[in-house]
Image (cartoon, rainbow, N blue to C red; front, side, top):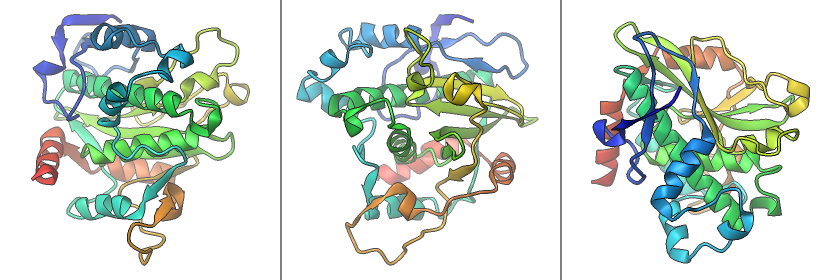
Length: 295
């Protein structure tokens, strides 16, 4: 599956307020495919557009200029080195999405919309990798940083108006990432997008492990298997989503709280996904929500 240089994000409704126009994967046929982006290809494509930034070089990333760092901070305005966020920021997302029934899924018109969205999701993960390396989260990024990274990324999606993004974690095998339920077309065929901002730590046996894994799965049954935990399935044992109830609704203004302190964990994972698939929201509604936020 290769990129199509004639089809890029400018041909579709953009969701991110920032970002690059990048080639989309070619998805043949009318059926809903399962597919994965090739991280090395998109690193090179973004490198062409940003002055050849090299994600494999921690030394060069830690030396990026303040102007470059600010550019990537625009993708993730609330980026945190320790998963602590201003309580007002988290509360504002819950207020913003009160008019929506949550959890929800992304309603794509067709597979081209799905492909465009997945490429934009990759750009958020890419930006996080730059910031995570620049600030050296936990002094060990990307290793042992999956929780902080997933927190940063899901808050980033919410900030861009994408309330469908969920923080997913496998408590048994200690890994955290993002899951985004979706449906496609008039038949509303269900699927799942997985975004993993620290996927490279899951492949200790590879010389060049895939950074920022992003893939879409067709159907409701899926697994996430890597070299981590002896190749076990990292399917989540718990979730946090934008509709989770506040744990501490009386927390003081501007208090810094850990992401997991603020929201209730959803333990009925499959039930939560089912509710999300049964409650799709179109990208037009996402765009409208975004515009209302900016006003």
